[in-house]
Amino acid sequence: MNALLSQDAPAHDWYRFVLSFPPHLVRDYTHRFGLDGKQRLLDPFCGTGTTLVEAKKLGIPSVGLEAVGVSRLAASTKVDWSPDPDSLAAHAGLIAEKALAILAADGISDEPMQDPPSEVPLRSLPAQTAKLLLKNSISPLPLHKVLVLKEALEGEHDARFAAHEKLALARVLPTDVGNLRFGPEVGVGRVKQDASVVSRWMACVLSMADDIRHLGPSDSTPACAIEGDAREVGRYIEPKSVDAVITSPPYPNEKDYSRTVRLESVLLGYISERSDLQAMKKELVRSNTRGVYRNDNDDEWVSGDAEVERIAASIEARRIELGKESGFERMYHRVTKLYFGGMARHFASLGKVLRPGARLAYVVGDQASYLRVMIRTGQLLAEIAERSGYEVEAIDLFRTRHATATNEQLREEVLVLRWPGTAKA
Image (cartoon, rainbow, N blue to C red; front, top):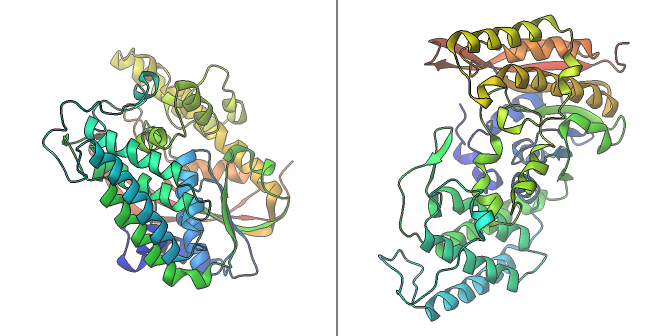
């Protein structure tokens, strides 16, 4: 149910997060909410832009918030169908020629090689930047080719095409060029000594150009992704300007979403040192222990919430019972409270930008990542939203998945809300 249908591939497939929800879910809820071109749709956790792309295809104006730079690049580029496709293809061809010439001058082919010429010093990342990557996430020779292609991209920069060309590189990096695998956790798979880079990148650009030939006539529908923290929606979006929300926030678990896009984030220059990574993570809802900081206080937003406190206490009691003493395990109970507190902040801020009668759909999932203590995410978020003034219309079952750790069926649900127009006192 999470697979991308062939008819949905245009624009969606330019770059897709492994955990993205399917476009048909957006279609289902835009239809259910009766949305059309006169209304405005918001995705406050827009990721790589599934909601925005599908809304644009349906002629519905949309806006998204996203704190992760490479995801924001994807979302904003996937809704930009303005480039002339022939000119985009021609410009990318010039860049490819330049990159191939640089490689050829050193005796390096874009086709996979057994070994580069021994006398050629391969390009590499600065040591502090390389440390941000998973070990062996990309081999030295493909990395050299990527850095050569990046130099050609920067040298032939054209604002009309730069975002699309950059996104095409992001698209090929993880598995075509790099050694990553997703299942859905990110990890290192088979280590390739070499891979084609320029030709794979060029194929992606040509595919984009082909999609734009078909999508271009619909480019007039407004859609954009802006940098922002979903816990402070009111800072970025005009008051009472949004008619609907369709989104999938992070779930409370140990998935560090920044790791999933780390290779692209580093090689495209979004993060180059640990402080860049920390600054980005601080704009995210605290959904995993690797994104928790000393001064975080979102838990204050759910202070006194009996169910959140019960779950956090159960996690901590379970940790003590099992003798788990790592620093991350000691934070499991805290990150649970920070997550639901962050979502409470989100709902409070979101109310300021919604028009009375706005409808909302949140794709969320149960979790048992913290020492097998069950967290019914949808039900808890429904209760938190209700206290913030929202009406709970439904909690629709999207699908179930089997959790091997607990031998239980975990629910993925769509929490459906309505904003009546005023927050509860």
